[in-house]
Length: 225
Image 1: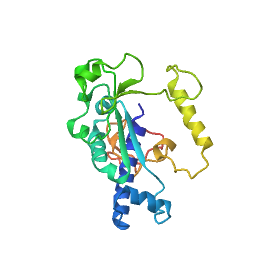
Image 2: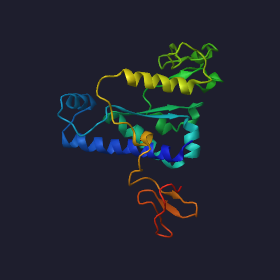
Image 3: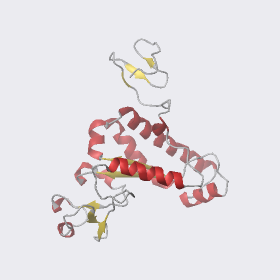
Image 4: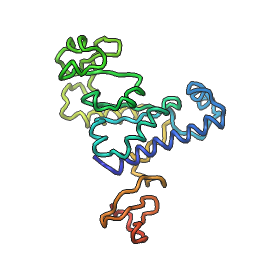
């Protein structure tokens, strides 16, 4: 997993949240519905984004490998929805998600579990979920069937990443409306000034914003990690 890109993404979403909080105060915005209307009418022009989604595919892995972002993501989940910033998580077990964060997740979908006793929706209903890919339970204990995100007519999943990318590119090519500016992380842009510091190869604390090593105080080439 790309450590640099993960950190940039979390920092960027946190930055959008901070910006939205200031804009809501500045324009006396009551709620997100009013904010969308004001952007649509041109009364707010200094926010290039619409609703923002932070998708974490594999929460247990992210917590294990990027523990420093755990609290930040919890804060985004707790404060973000009011400002049109959504957090979407996937996990193999509900127990992987701290109760404080779990309480912030308003919509929960549960695919078939290995053990129905792990269900937070209904253990008896979970036992009745068919042993078929994509089948699961809604919060209302109703069955759902998730579709494979591809439009090439195939049902296989071994090349799903390429198929999903192709779907996204096709949708983007077909869209004629206003486009969002995209993510700095996706574009590989420079890290924001408040990007978390990490250890350099020499064991020092590396400052990504200034491209300097705190031990030597010297600037390093831009390709140094």
